[in-house]
Length: 187
Image (tube, rainbow, N blue to C red; front, side, top):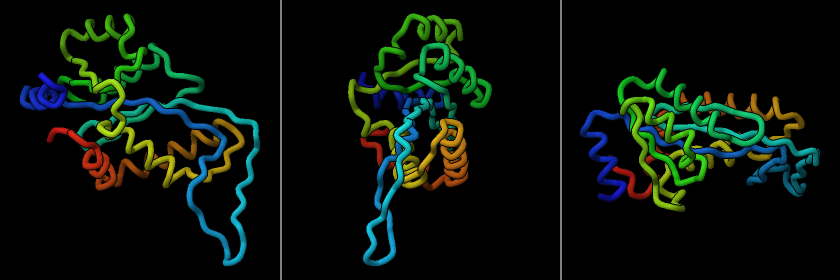
């Protein structure tokens, strides 16, 4: 049975499908198209003191959930995020994510087993960001909301990203578009 068929089955079983993905943010600005007065080249200042943050986020129905961490995401942060989802998304969950080593770790497997079936895992194909709607959410954040952002401190970057994602939460058509952009995503 393919991933799409298993996800459709999860929906029929009354499980909420939750798509999870991780991403990184950096104080180094991601350059996107911008504007300047006619005849003047736009100039973006960089600080060259790059600090980075990691984000773990999920889409469940038309809701977006997020946590930001300094450094990289490790097993304990993923478990903390899964617990966060269980508090906020009622019922049984089918967690859909990529095949990253962190998702296959013994720590994660033991945690999922301890939920007594409340959390079930489904993996996306090996490298298929085009079918993960959260990837489209990250793209929207980085290209439209914090592109060209000059943040010298990690806390400032975190604050700007959180504010942008909070505004995206209220814009359900954008979240729906993330699903529509994802190829092969089951209804």
